[in-house]
Length: 264
Image 1 (cartoon, one colour):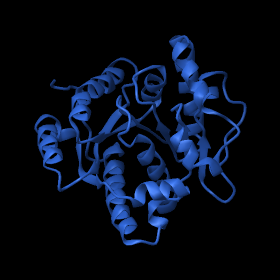
Image 2 (cartoon, helix red, strand yellow; image 1 turned 120 degrees about the vertical axis):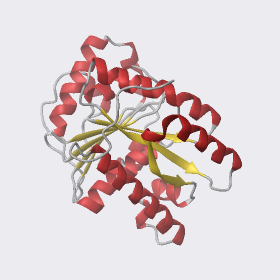
Image 3 (spheres, one colour; image 1 turned 90 degrees about the vertical axis):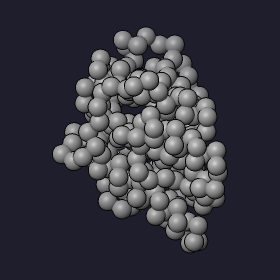
Image 4 (cartoon, one colour; image 1 turned 180 degrees about the vertical axis):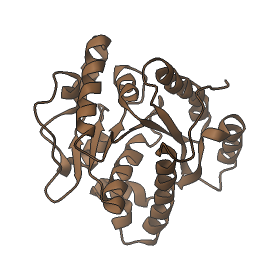
């Protein structure tokens, strides 16, 4: 089965959509893979960036009846978007025993037609986040080195390993990703030391710095490495190094198999 990779965190504004989109671009542009990106967020930021790759199936439909046909990417491209939207909020009021199995079955079907499926999740633990984790082979947790973000790491890890133990034994934590890092911030450096003291084994040894080229590229609907500027080249080098490390951890035959326990 193809990798089904969730970018998830129970806190908003940490870069889930940014990294989901750029990871999909990286798989396609660097490795020539076909990718289906599912946007489960009502804000649909990933969908805005990738709108030209949109399919005729919306994300809310994945929680219903089995898809009648496959999903194709945009013309001449190997990315297909299953867009999010405000209707997704209705899923949180649905019956878990109905919508979660339906979503899992549809994701498994999509995984047969693409080299990878990437799922961008909402910033809260609910049915959509649970369905994504239950359907995934790996989860990536972007965090910012701020006090509130660090406080939420333990809860997110407990959620991941709880889902793995009860519902999805194949789920693997690819790692915690330090996003929007400012090397000149004393506060962020202190937060990083705190994070490493508690969760060093889960932290990916790569950081994504705060760079204007990243939001500029997303606003233009292109990967950051397509921008002809030095800041874009620096951002690209960091992102590609990060994504390479994530793929190594997601390789079942490689290093990075993580334990299923968390010390609070």
